[in-house]
Image (cartoon, rainbow, N blue to C red; front, side):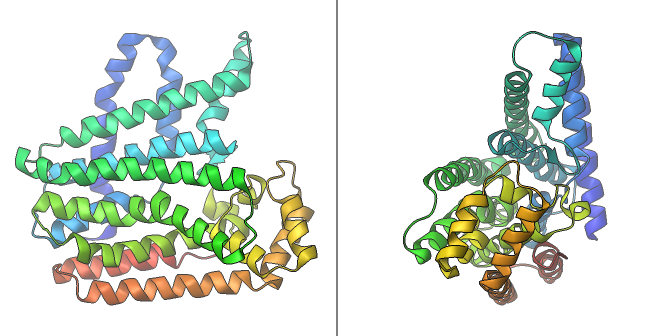
Length: 353
């Protein structure tokens, strides 16, 4: 099955589920319409990587095609929606996938309606609730996928630990931003990599792949982890690079937004590890400034390049991608699944800057 066909099936399952929920929200009242509008806008974008890894974990472990696996896999997009909505609130992001972030939509609704109180507080509160709805729905969609009870029982532990890990990873991210830089540069890099492992690598690749395999009855969790973890790390490192140097048309966010948000990524940790005193002072002064303009963004970009951090990050991406490819070659999967996962590896790690 081609990647475009997998995406089509996932999209159809996802939109069908949301459509079935519309009467539930409508019965509560018309005030819920903006929540569905914000969710529709968010779900219209995205690469559907998590459902794709889940599907190929299933197919590669002997599972047969059918609407049930696409529904189970598509439930991960509602988990992703929840994580993105909450992440944007915590980061104060203005945009997501080229459109206003959910909390900004609700903030605008408050302001345009002339309601009382703080528009910003209303926007954050409404977005948190929408993220909670998505988290609830992901469970409902997974459990109601139509897969046999025994399959759901096998997959449930992976589904549950994935949701816990991504939230813990988000907390580690918050701690890292609040704590700032450590004296030991290598410790900074290791701390940033720990966030990557739990917030991104496990959640984006390793657990979705294991979930599909577990649903199909495979017990090869360690072998799949040997592939999924390095792919997930490489994916996030690439995303970190794009967050600083990427084209807004590709990333869906303004250029340098990660710098304004003060994200303590591996790329930034590598920069501070290699920076001289003056460069480090400039990074610490500019990083996390919400008013950072084009000149400030360009100055930070220059330091990242001058210190060799960008090249070092690119080498890490290549090393993790190579490690994943080696593990994939010996993974207990069908030849069709290995070929599809090889394509997904490229799609997840070799995006253009």
